[in-house]
Length: 217
Image (cartoon, rainbow, N blue to C red; front, side):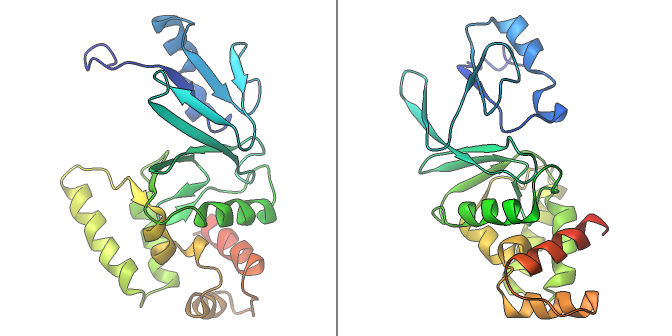
């Protein structure tokens, strides 16, 4: 695919260690050569350059720069890469959803998502999976009267019917339709309390209940 589309690979940036994200790395390196730089939080491969919070990475002779942010929760080694235009967020943030909490704590995941929500609204969100429709099916059960969410459901349905991806989204859009970024919203909390038949406090407690509910949805 790389040669047929005349693509140039300058580096591989890894968000976390799960096999569906790193399974093809060795094949790419062996095919295209080990001169390709490889970045991740941990030493997942011998040639990896380990990244740190706040680090800036430069690609294509400085024509593209990305900053590193550590976002533990889905895994403890999860990082995202971003600049003033785009965010590559792996499995931490999905459109209308977020990743499961496998290694970290709900507190860590909540904090990580809060950091992402404070990025500029216009930032394009490139997540790692096309889970948008299934995420929206869950989100609308929690916020059935959210007008932005209902409009987005229609938009995504049209795109998918045409065989188009729903991604990229944007930070601004996610703050209006993603329940995991809206755990302080009174209407959302009220609906979730009714679903679970238990009182909830805004913030972390609501996020934890929401994530656990989604895990079994």
